[in-house]
Length: 408
Image 1 (cartoon, one colour):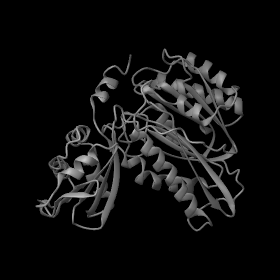
Image 2 (cartoon, one colour):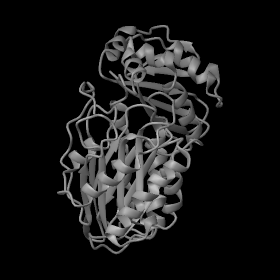
Image 3 (cartoon, rainbow, N blue to C red):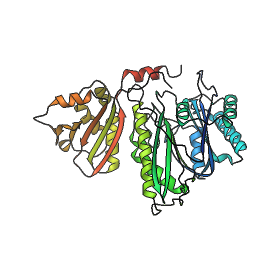
Image 4 (spheres, one colour):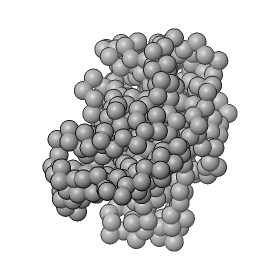
């Protein structure tokens, strides 16, 4: 965790204890830092699991194995290593992960494929097996920790711990959600964010849990970007212990299924926003709302083209109401757009309508809006009913400073 805290940081929320979930932390010493860097979460038997992962083809062993393990639908434990991504490490990286899964499985008396592992940090350095073994050994019997301690432990360049919670009533039973995430840079997930974990005591069949998480991802984690880079390790996992005692949710026909899906999406949206608010060097949180597209997916792609534009992001950082840069980004998105139907605004004030600057456009309210921490950009393509909102941050010199010395 960085010493300098993002100006967009939020206090860590009070997360509920989740029946069947026990987090613990330990210091493996993956980097030369005086902090814990290994998180171990023990899960009750019969815990269901679902996941979404990076599409980066140079992904880590942890991602490759996770994709296969998810097919089994069951989990007993999670191990997260911080400070070493264990990506681009060949057979040595895989041996390290298999050592961890075997060690935890032997402790719990469960199959190895029910032990999920994530790693984050520097790419190209094999996870040291001796440090991993010692760290896991300590974590297995460590005193249970708080959610905030677990959130801090999975962080790397994060400047604050990130957590979210929600609840829902299912089949007459109140179910709880607690979630933590890490992520600050290399965020353009297209199937996840960096490392995020959602825990609930709801009883949910694995296939339906996967359906709900995948749907939530489309409107949350796949709608954020910090720098347009997609990590080798991006993972979001959802675990459902079933300890709430509700009748297991199997489909949207199950009583309470809609409430469950809504709560899960709410948690995912909270987490996604927190990652953007901790974007490396970020000073402003930006929401880009696109309407009038030919489809929702087209709107999302246009929004991401705007959100990923260095020219747009630096203009926002400089508090410059240069809506011409938004025009440029729309045009390069590769999606249907008509220059003469395009409308652009900032903070609810339209600067251009139907392809032309407004004759009575007053830049003063826009300039005032751009001095705030939370910025909105509105784009109407005027072509259809498609709509989407994506979230990003501004691009400042702080991003360069953080990443120029990342390995030190």
